[in-house]
Image (cartoon, rainbow, N blue to C red; front, side, top):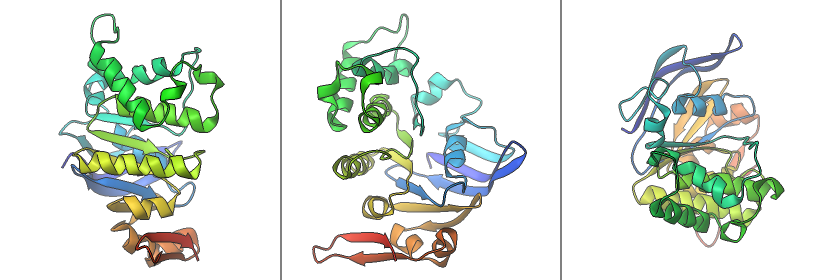
Length: 254
């Protein structure tokens, strides 16, 4: 297993936010984390990334504790996309994407030919090639989100952790993001995605974790989790899972 969590507890401000979570992520898996607002999804993702202190339990990333290993080492294995991203300087888009290559660089940190190739490929798969020379601080929210996604992809890590990567995106780009992640996982990478888009999660993920009140309340195939009593209790409504005449599955609040 590439990632392993064992009885993980996290406290923030003296309050238990993640409670006794045990789970794993393996090569080729696209895992989606769903749950109501304030359930602990983002904190769990940050714990996986080693960005928040674990009060008890253990997190392992390729055998390492990500909170106690040099970030440059971890960045070669793990990329993290937060919900909020700010830059203090007016970088152009290509420069922002290239920031994802820091773990691959040495010396003065100048971009190599390999870095430029990786950046261009990341911009291509996130449909931002036409924005390469634009200033990041002049982009729309959806455009900026795709730029930061490209930065995470450009990093070349085996696992990507994404917190609401489709927030603010139009339906076509949101679908394209999940299709791209599915293709990467099918090629041997892995991804863990916090999302509120249950329909896209059902269509593209192989594994779903339901987080409720800090606990891992259910996990398994997305259709099974969405139809479970635990999901009904967490969201206080039923999620209808059906199949269109084309054969495509869909999920909507009942």
